Amino acid sequence: MTYPVPHREYLDTVCTGGITRDGEWIRLYPISYRYLDRQQQFSKFTWLKLNVRKSLKDNRPESFQPQEESIEVVGRINHPGERRYWLDRMLSPSIEHLEEMNREEPYSVSMGLIEMEYQDFYWKEEIREWSSKHVDFMKQQQLIGPTRRPLEKMPYDLRLRFRCNGNPECTGHDMSIFSWEFNQTFRNWRDSGKYSEETDVLQVLKKSFEDRFGSSKNISYVSVGTLSHYPTWIIGDLHSVAQDIPAQPPLM
Image (tube, rainbow, N blue to C red; front, side):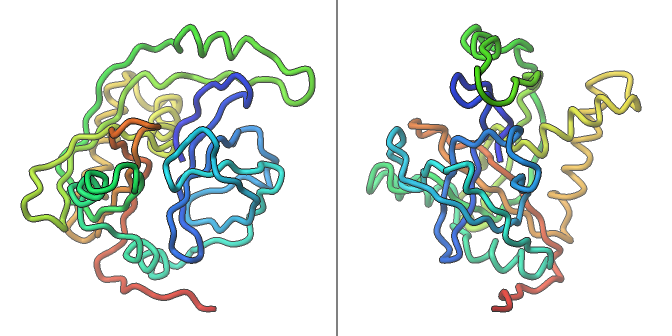
């Protein structure tokens, strides 16, 4: 799930990537996640039941528009072995493999999961104000429905350098992390009062990345997708599972 962005019609929206029970990728957009009823709000490794239709504005094959009022949380994958089962099932060999698929057939794939070798976590400072277009969106109020809530623009572009484990010739990738989880972690730690400077928070976040995704005790996965209609790949999420935990198929 990506960090929220102001939207003219949907207050603010996130883009959510997932899979179906049949093991097919699906992208759900737009979702006004912060304005969903609490019982509809979901997290990673949650099974949802909802109505969708193929997106009319997005020709990427995985992209669907959800009917928000139909969202129902129906289960959660808690066992790490079952999480590994689904992660391993969705693996692609490499970013290079995904790019080659798109060269052979344009727009044939825009989502993928890669087993990665962690190289580095770093950041770039961003403009701290929303664009004029987004500011205008945030000034608009709906006659019916919830009131817009404040939404901070992320002051940093969190980035990851990694290699694809499935391609010995991979020279490495450098991508932005759009995941709400990790961007929100920065904000939560910054606002906790434990750190005097934002750079201190970023250094602690860097250490947590090194300990989790750089550990030889873990298998690390990066979930990627293309940015709208452009061929630029970004990181939608990151996962890790302990090396010694075997994949466990779900109990039917």
